[in-house]
Length: 287
Image (cartoon, rainbow, N blue to C red):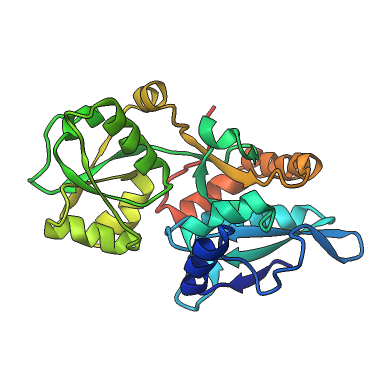
């Protein structure tokens, strides 16, 4: 049975600044991968719980979301693996993964080439549709590329795939940059800020827009960008997967998790779970 440890954001910030390790569990001396029950390996799963519907707390303060429930289904299939969830702020996820405090991270992470240089990844479980969210009636018509956003203002959460693509654009276009306001605001606050005119656009995913923009009743619109264009130009990856620490060898357990995950994808269970969390959308990888 998966366990959950919730970490205060303030402690996460302190740990990051003081140690460079990120926020973690209450037992700093414990190894992430340890055997707490005979024959069962406990893997510590880091998650931010801040991007609905991937990972969040519901109205009963229960950790849930597509990523979380998918891991719980995987857990049911594996007798020798248990998951312990630890919640921390997004900037703390990667330092904890680097140090081995977290065995893996479940936070809708794109398996980019940059990240693959540092981490191992599971099989993909999400195929994303990236795009630009703008205020209704105030946006750029016929938007097809990031270049058209030069001179515009946006929020940027440090470390997110979207932010990295915008930073790459700015580096390549120093005379026509995008104004990135770095922030730790929750996504709901960012979308509200966009609707109020605090920024001109938000770089996001279709399902995130549906959860924080459309269903929230905000006057904002979503324009998808061509996935091949984003991959070819910015080296991003349209697929999300679970990221594993290389502090210890996880190759055997990754193979087990992939086996269970592929079964859930093949028999339609993952697709049904997706439709539950994404308003009827199937976000699983398409053949």
